[in-house]
Length: 296
Image 1 (tube, rainbow, N blue to C red):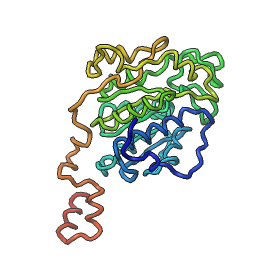
Image 2 (cartoon, rainbow, N blue to C red):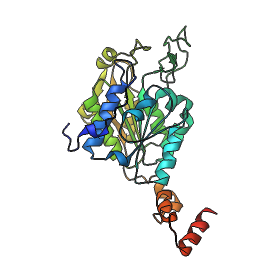
Image 3 (cartoon, helix red, strand yellow):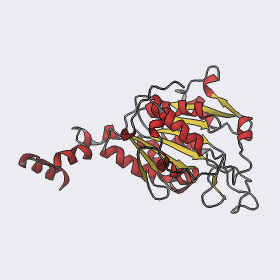
Image 4 (tube, helix red, strand yellow):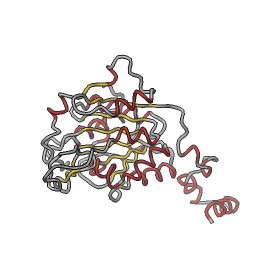
């Protein structure tokens, strides 16, 4: 990928503490490449994360960062976007944080369509708490909390997002950071909620879904002859593919759907909280009364 902005602008001096070989390294690299390609400066970016291994990512990027409590980053990100629509708001969290503890927020974010991007680090396990099965673990998956194998069917993020009304749904693989960077860039460009479910091995606790396991199965949707991401029915069928063949790339995208911010009447006059705060520093009597009417 050719970039006009140097991705190193997002580097920090903070020591990265992920396990060697963790897929989060590739996600960090791909996100930097995507933002550099789009020429989005660090001060224009807000990274919102939850709790988990991958949620430490904002510490490793030179940008605004906000680590929330477990499962709540989408709610915080939506609020941040309403307060300052000029920010490029990106959520980065794991499969347990997003689809388990934050599952309710995930579904309602899909239907609300705020103009934010979510990158889910989906390693099919709870890594930070030492290897419990997660919502995306396949049935039969053996962990410390499922010694006889997980008895539930795996949560299908793409299918759930499609059913809930998400306007951009994509999947990527951390073993191919260049392809991932392109997918992330597409998601950030999309006007509306963009889900990017990243299949990433946990080299410490998941010995099933390894890099080799994924490489034998993933294929790029953009190379699939005749596939059109705007076809909702075709996207539904692709969302069901798992096992021998796993599609990566943009599964579904529809444009022109109003965002959540578009429909909030308080933002119609172009005065979100960020601008009101600028005004509040030295308001005239008339401006003060106007502010009081809005908030009292």
